[in-house]
Amino acid sequence: LVHFREWHGKLLNVHPSLLPKHANLMDIAVHQSVLDAGDTETGCTVHQVVEEVDGGDAVVQMSVPVLPSDTAETLKSKVQALEGESLIRAAEMFYRDRKLPGAEKEDCKKQKVAGGDKMAN
Image (cartoon, rainbow, N blue to C red; front, side):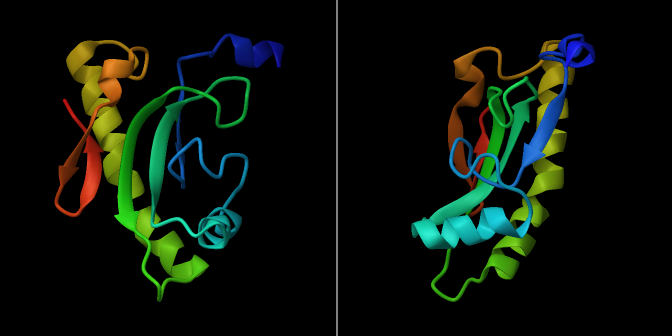
């Protein structure tokens, strides 16, 4: 834990849900939780890593609809397809602003893009 404090606010993680929903779950359990909750959309969140698991500020969120025919496995596949692009978007924000995104809430404005959400520049 002491070693982690050196990195506080300097790391990003991709979580397979629209945090804060379904935090502290991993892999297929996240997607099953989405289905069990009756959510109409799911996605991924790039967030700052802090001591609290999945508790850091959201930097980028991208979403997809949950269809009646979806299973935990199909949701996992749909969300994984968003994860790489969301991490690239977070890196682009850092490159542009020279600061870790998510520090200011206005960095987290959503806009609709091609059937999903992306954070606005």
